[in-house]
Length: 468
Figure 1: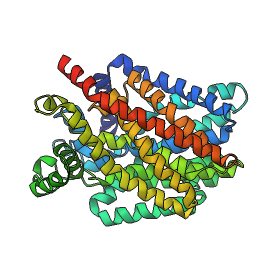
Figure 2: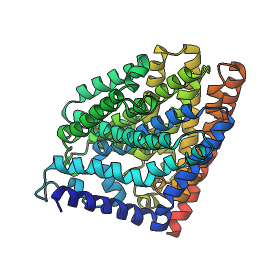
Figure 3: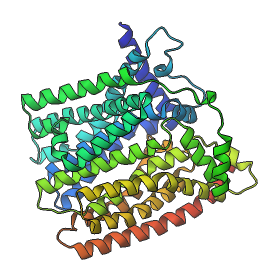
Figure 4: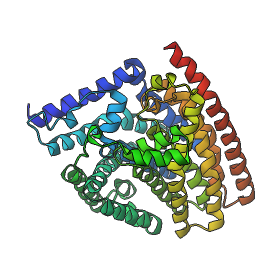
């Protein structure tokens, strides 16, 4: 057995054991089943709205690409997130200093491990959710097989692309900002051109040219990430910025100041919030563009962007709580309510500037009057996401990733709000007044529910932590 094969098998087993230990083996193994069922149920619900199979498949590729980018943020959060979630452990990908193996080989194997691992546990069940459509004649078996290939390749492109961008960032922050800015402008101005370089183009037109283009772009991203990435210094070697903390403490409360300082000093700093929301914004632009091309629908960019950016703030909540030790807060004289209020302020301080900036970029393609709806919807949906996440997960948002029960409950909670908002966005072209009314009404009610959940979360988690 070669060294690369041995590393791959050990990393794959390591990944499985970590998830099985963190979330329970039985619950974790149910996750692929839940994914297939949610996909099949989602397809049925979208069919009731009149959405075509082609539009749904475009959305699946966009979401899978976003998921791949999130998985690839190992280059942004690095050891910080892993240490905070798993404790003082060393994964194989970070063992270049202790093993006679180059960091580039470890990162290369790690990327392939992630691609195969998520292909097995997430992507294949996702495609299996399309089987009912295939059995009823909506898709041929050849199309389903091609969908499986292009979905896997799209995820791989997202994962490799994220690590490649992180690699650029480790060498030059200015270069990273420039590349991301160019990509965002390209997505807004020429989305069809960028799609032509992705595996989704192969699904649309399965020709040797599109296949070759997809392979070249994917191979380039897979090679660039390990070559460019340079790990940041361990946080234990960094000095505490007392001056910055004092300044933050002078303008806000101690819990907000602490959370903001923790995010800014973690790998990727606050820019990872911008990258995360920017990726989601780009996916939304591409999806709306595809929808407008494939149908006669003229969707509302403001409602759609505000909704999706609001849903994307889940990652912001994860980052403002990533270093928390819940037991530590029980020793403080303040109640947990003060802690959650500080988290909410830090949550908005990190997410609102980036979200509003992306909505402003949308003006390159959508009317200002339309985007004004997004300025209202985005923070309201964000409050709902904060309240729901805080109430369900407390300070451990990572548990949602593979805890089947929590994931299902959380998914239903998000769908109750996101589905009517997205339907309102799609209906904007034919019924603008009604769509605006529905969107604002749903967003306001969702924000009220989120506020109630945020207020109830401290009491719930105080009792749970005391019981433990």
